[in-house]
Length: 449
Ligand code: FAD
Ligand code: NAP
Image (cartoon, rainbow, N blue to C red):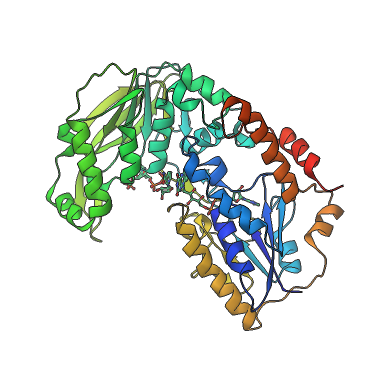
């Protein structure tokens, strides 16, 4: 028998880790991939925007990993609820946590929890069909939406809200989300960046796409694009992202203000929310104008001025970053929302990969290098004789003893087939099953008897 490794979390980091482990010959490795949902792929299924179907296609590479000898999926199994870390540590030589960042960062301003103030994490999970988020009700009847943050998730949220019925129809966005977006009263989506255009975290292709929407114009005030000397200098050093972003924004600032499209996306910079206000629900965001300063570490930071303004709006999406949550029995750094590690090793036998290792940033491909680095250390520790397990019981036996129903890969394939079959006659890649019971029922149909 080879080295037994549990990988917890089936997003990109988990699959890239499984891939690197299963390629090892010295030692040979068997991988059990444990996932709390009945479905794999993490944010590729439940985060990546539904109108970016080509990006979701990375799951084909993960399907090839799952087909390798030595791979086994245990879906519908949450570590910390259905099985403990200590139980895993007893039956595996090594455990790699690749559980991502399951919640949102807080801004710490008054009114953040008012009804109508939502984390982007919630909205994204809802329109993508995450089974834990389907009971949420987003009131999109107001004319103005505020999206806080200048990252690619903020762009995803703004773009999804601006898509036309024709743009949404061929996607795997859930039906309730399609209906809500089509029926929304939205006229303006205001995106707030606390720093300037040269510091925006979005990537140029995503920013460019905002300017190519069928049903929405994009606006930027020329005054917002005036750069301070430090930002000008930064543009010279970051020609791939910052320079290209600013060029795209400058082109947006020259566009006519009205073109007959029904919705508008307004990008504002140097503007921070200081409070979300309203009687029992969101009615406005109070913002402050910022100026930029270079701090003692050389970082360009936003500093508030006295200039304040109120932006009336019906709903707010806070898109200021994701945050990791602890796994019971495993060390955790509350401040960074990560499991403390060195290059992926917490200690011999316990490792991390992906967003729980380095924090919630980076695209899908970033997790490949990251997971490969971690696996290098697992193999190094295995070859050094540092890894062992106490129990020869299999995870399937432990789960059966505890009465936990788990979804194996054929169960997921049955869910996948059911979803694709439902999508096909409607010209959509799939119609997702979004309720736990539906997912488990579909998985049972594919389970080996
Ligand atoms: P995740 O993908 O989050 O996977 C973690 C998995 O762990 C999940 O399946 C979760 O259910 C599971 N899990 C959590 N806790 C437990 C537990 N206790 N027990 C068992 N399982 C558990 N990158 C791009 O390249 N292109 C894009 O278009 C793109 N769009 C994005 C859109 C959004 C909204 C977001 C948030 C990110 C996007 N990214 C995109 C970035 C990319 O999705 C991430 O880099 C990547 O998913 C991080 O991988 P991960 O494996 O660390 O985490
Ligand atoms: P992100 O890129 O880190 O952006 C977070 C944004 O929130 C930044 O603009 C940040 O501003 C701002 N912010 C943080 N705290 C704030 C506060 N208190 N008030 C106001 N603004 C605040 O995070 P993300 O958008 O969640 O994306 C996560 C990762 O997924 C990124 O690497 C992203 O590229 C990736 N992703 C990729 C795609 C794609 O490729 N299409 C799509 C989605 C996500 P500061 O810079 O000033 O801190």
